[in-house]
Length: 173
Image (cartoon, rainbow, N blue to C red):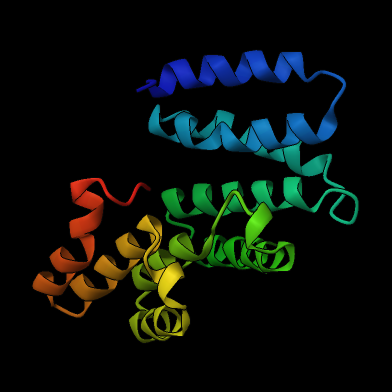
């Protein structure tokens, strides 16, 4: 376990080491958003995302673009800016689907489903979940989103059932 504060320090060190490698810097700055948010440092998270976003070259480096869009969506979700979150996550999902499963490191689908539920679009989220194949539905982040859908449908038993492998540790988030 690494605390969010320690993770920020490690990310800062990694950004310094990647001084001449823009894609690495952009990806690191974006991935730092989550620990910054956990520490309540939203303004700093916003500044780092802005800096990462300014250097994007989507046609040259779609993976860094995917990471920055995902991180932006996550920050907007945390801030309660749900429409913006969904737009950024949808863009990240589009990029992810273009890359193929073997190179994907970030899967925005689960966070997109959670955002839809929080926006009251439970039927839409449920339909999107149903459209996923069995392997995709078995991933921990999708299971967490499925539990949120079940809770929104007032079915806590189904939520617990779908979360059981995550709680037991056989599916990692």
